[in-house]
Image (cartoon, rainbow, N blue to C red; front, side):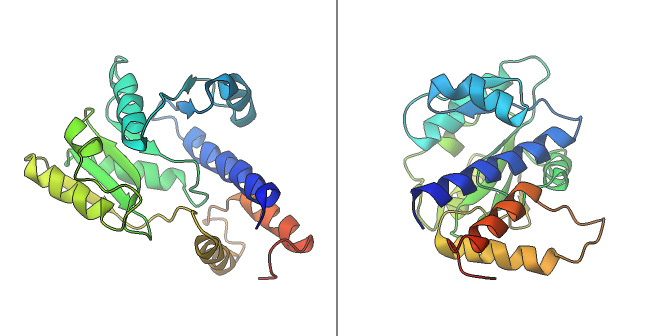
Length: 210
């Protein structure tokens, strides 16, 4: 779809994810940023004051050290990690994850491509985030996570699917979900920034009409 509309969608997805994370008072929100020199700018942009540089390296190392940084802070456990491409994330997803973590050591939510879009745990488990058996970006990431968790003798909880947006097909699925939710019900949480951006892109002819 081109760099400009893709960047616009990344921007609004981040805004809606941040809004969901900021809404509840039960956790301390942290933003891990790459490139490091953008931390201050992004913290101001999404109103999450605690912004830190990501380490360089593979996604597993970034996640592991991000989780470890939180566990090192007194009272910051359990830890839940989410990415910035989850425009349908709501506070309810995070509350649900916290409830599951009362009885399970690890919790995750499945993504459409066989990976996971959310992971929570009570301590930074190296075996679950940096094991060579995990074929990142492959279709078996979630299944491997569950196998590794149970092999380590840890209890595991699985949340309902939560879709991230990696591909054009994912974007079309998101638009379909938003149309289904567009009933104006006050009980439905709408990703306002994402919906507005999609309307602008459609009006500009950058994406086909819904």
